[in-house]
Length: 384
Ligand SMILES: NC(=[NH2+])NCCC[C@H](N)C(=O)O
Ligand SMILES: [Mn+2]
Ligand SMILES: [Mn+2]
Image (cartoon, rainbow, N blue to C red):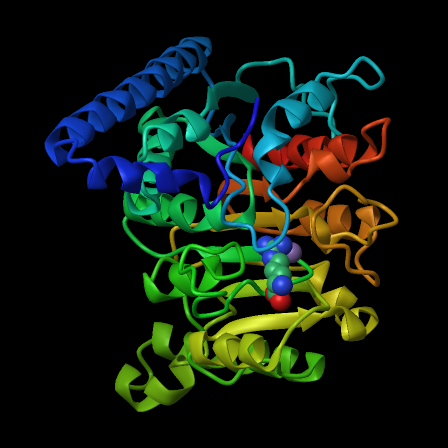
């Protein structure tokens, strides 16, 4: 298998120059896209019917692979990740129980609808505007089949934009996002690519798919408690209609955080400015020991449509996860991440695990196991 890199698509422009009618190309491309969506739709339908027939499930994780690597600013290996992650999920060296005792073998807990055929679609000359729509469509097809919830296997981090867009559009409003990453991925347009993996959270915030903080961010930990405490009292007054809501408009503009970026240790001035502009709360590794308690007791998703979790594998220290494109020392331990996940309170409506690069992994596939365990524990978090 090979990937069609960022430059590989250019021979389609030559075809255009050679007077191949645009409608001929476009019709053919649409047939390929329809065929791709049909397979995902039918697999999702079958898995949905199965889970509903078994009964008693409110939410069930369903894997959707998005093998896309060309929006990476560095290496393109994440395009090869989904099959390696699946292989590691079911690897005989472990078993099918999650840490807190969910059974992954049970289709009520975990199913799989396969991969979006990203390479096949791009091979037909489909551009990124349409490819991103196909990814969003695929996510919606999974969500169509209640109680299935998408657990997306990347791919580079650019895929989070079409995925979160689909989740928010399908649920009819913004979500809260827990974003674990060494990088904030919030450049307006990294190296001129608006779909870059380093720009996905700018697109998410512009689209209004995540709740925004209306107040300055990066408040010290002590202020967080103050904010929570004041909020509680004011809410009680408002609830009992002791004061007109209007009078507290300014204070009401202090919702709980919207996007929590955790693990950050490679951030530029633009990353900080964009974070402020969009009301994103950035927790940097240099203050992790101070923030740990807060982060290990997160409560998200109240007053919005739920919680989305996006895990860039490079949030982990490279000692735990060497198989990533952007090696950035000084990161989270695997147990730090699990503590944050296990203790998070909130209805997790969808999630992704991105940026695992098998071409950078150790020969024994250590990072594949790490990515797979993240997927397993996210499965447990989603399914109920
Ligand atoms: N999704 C990612 N791994 N993004 C990494 C972006 C790296 C980029 N060089 C930056 O300065 O932020
Ligand atoms: Mn990253
Ligand atoms: Mn990232």
